[in-house]
Length: 176
Image (cartoon, rainbow, N blue to C red):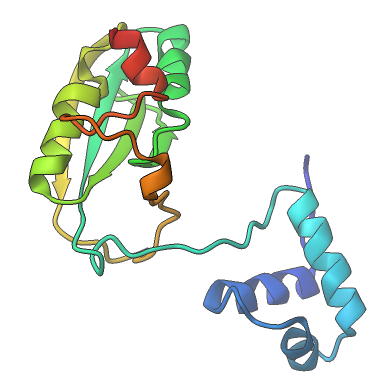
């Protein structure tokens, strides 16, 4: 969908990128716009897939460790299979399709360096079908953005295994 943003939409989005919890009334006061108008515009932006208000977390503040894995994937089918295998992974914070010699980038996080190492060794994509080359980059700290949409696993959703691998994981099922 090709949605065009007008000046008011951009101003609303600018306010929300600074504080995603800003009240409708505050936004409407700042823009000299009605509460109802702000609500309608936000609803449309959400419906059109432009805006999603969510709680983002700081990996640095949580003292989590993260890495990026650059991958050169043989075919589009292999690339799509790898993306599908990780689509519900709670430790994945980024998936980007790229142009160039590396055509996929995946970002993983772990609770500490040992946890991250286990995830890369046992759950990482480097040995999956279609992977020609890979490059691992450890992240020392996040500068921009500092906050990411992380999936934090509660005790109810965590499969307690020696390797901390989730039974529901599509990637894990492929290895079995």
